[in-house]
Amino acid sequence: MKKEMYVQYLIFRTLSISFYILSVTLLIVSFSNAETLDSKMGARPLGMSAYTAVADDINSISWNPAGLSLVQNQETAMIYAPLYTDINQSYIAYAYPFGKWGTGGIDFSYLNYGSFDWRDDTGRDVGDFSRKDYSIYVSYGLNLMESLSIGAAIGSTSIKIDPLGDSATGIGFDMGALYNIANRASIGIALDNIGGVSASDRKIARQKIRFGTAFSVINKQNSGLVIALDIEEQQRKFDTIYSGIEWSVFTPSSFYVKRKIQERYLTLGKYKDMADYTEGLPEKKGKASLYIRGGIQKRLSVDEPMAFSGGFCVKYTVIPKKMTLKIEHAFAWHPYLDTTHRLSLGLEFGKLIYD
Image 1: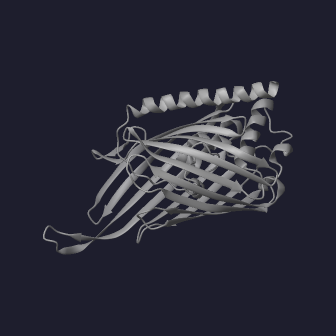
Image 2 (image 1 turned 60 degrees about the vertical axis):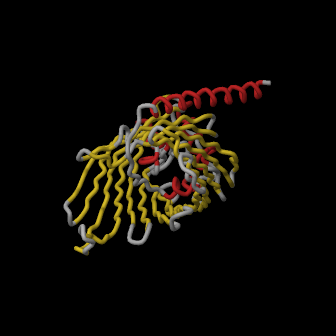
Image 3 (image 1 turned 120 degrees about the vertical axis):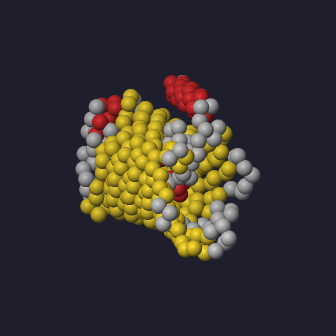
């Protein structure tokens, strides 16, 4: 009887919080109307498609800064993405946890569009021009109370066109929130480019809002499965729906483990005796692990076929409880564009906050 009442309580709590966050989202939507430039990277969020409520690693810097509160040790990531023809993107990020004081992070993105023909009004070729975009953001995530985390980010986005000498730089603000429920579920909201990013009387980035939920379906010593769902708002309407999965092949789901560790700290005020909750985690056991990801995207505002994504992550402990190497790949298949790939190399290093 007590177990049934507890399950009913969890369901009621989840629905109540979901309704509250959705209401806040709709309120924000009614005041938003801006333009966009998306420079987000990260093999895990791009492979899964849905990441807002999954956020718990270095990718949280640009996808949902509230997720930084779940980072367990220092992390760094470097990504290279050959996109279309001469277009390519590079990215580097770093996150540092301060224990109960939260986690800070910084990332830098460079997007090179390559060279284009430059012609005058008569169609005569007068040379080439090129465009490059830069963005740098500083983020911070903090556990505010019980299972609720919040985060914020501030940064700049710049556009430069040569040899015209045309450039523009604007300041952007992001915010996020994450609520974890019984270690197995999370709901989150991420607001990107709040109010839009303007420079030289023009919009160079538009506001976007993502509402997401995630649930850990399988939690075993040698496997784990997480499913996630996001919906994105742009220009006063729900634009895209995203769904994704992450399967942990040899170890428990890091989604579940990280939330259990946070709950343990909030309950006891310390990370002591965490072995029961970190059993099987590569950083603790010195194992290799494999994660397989997949995702689906569907535009709601226009009629077009679904897009698909996927990828994998291999984690290998170089020095037990000191350094873990991450090699990741993500691909995105679009019905009208070429398939794109992201290659990522990352490190998790330094003392774990629960040791």
